[in-house]
Amino acid sequence: MPKKPLARFSARKGKLVNLAETSAVAANGDLARRVLAGERRALAQAITLVESAHPDHRAAAEDLLARVLPHSGQAVRLGITGVPGVGKSTFIEAFGLFLIEAGHRVAVLAVDPTSRRSRGSILGDKTRMEELSRAPAAFIRPSPAGHTLGGVARRTREALLVCEAAGFDVVIVETVGVGQSETAVADMVDMFLLLLQPGAGDELQGFKRGIMELADLIVVNKADGDLATAAERAAAEYRGALQFLRPASRSWRPEVLKCSSLSGQGMTEVWATIGRFRAALDGSGELAEKRAGQALAWMWSEVGESLMAALRGHPGVAGQLKGLEAEVRAGNLTPTAAAERLLTAFREPSDGA
Image (cartoon, rainbow, N blue to C red; front, side, top):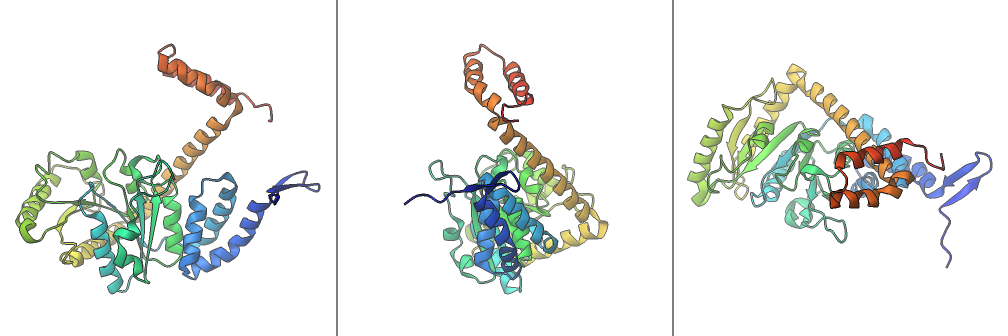
């Protein structure tokens, strides 16, 4: 059976028209309407569209985002990170169920490690948050981290906006763990929550200062049973350590809380603290400033990603890339000189220009 043609020549416009892209853009009005109506299937389809790396899908994704953007921005945006084994998924499930019981709708964008074979998520948070995933007022979306520093998928920001437009008033971004650049999380959320555990040795020395400087709230998890005393001690040590760090916000000083994801103890205090944080930043105007700055950071991040894609796809660059890489590996050419040659090739117009 012959394949359907993806494009046809338009005599009137004198150029190729991608039929798949055109039909996708035309269907976006209906998809956006269904997202705004809170349809879970439509929300999943919309996030799949914005996450797609296929060039033909970007126009459709941008059209969709333009339609839903005016309906976003009202949710509490919470980033959660912590070392593997700290119980992030258990905490998010317990906290999410607590919020749903209080009348909220919760979306979880869980950025998982990427499979080298399938390029998909490895951990699969829906299996680790089984009870929360069954709740009608919850939506869990595991996304592969890919090559992004800090374990945040490139399109997580866009997925966040779509979730807000679908009526979720709390959006949680869970990262893979403490990586090279957790600022990627801080640059898209209102509050950055660092989850820690007691009884893990020398907590203060074993944790990077930089990640603590980013945290708006530190929560010591597993504060129950035999670990209750250790959790109290760890919380006191972190409170002492925070006194020597400069707060990231002019309107808020980071706090340290304890909780038990198994018993639900401390969830009320965590949510109340998030509320006080939002009120403090909103009252000072800092929340609006923060989101505006995040939007600019997002813009420049997209510029960087797009320029890199254009660089690698340039015929002149592609023709020299392997050879220059080989010379750099062999030590025959400095990385700086190789980079300059690639940029020179990029600045030259291609044959098809």
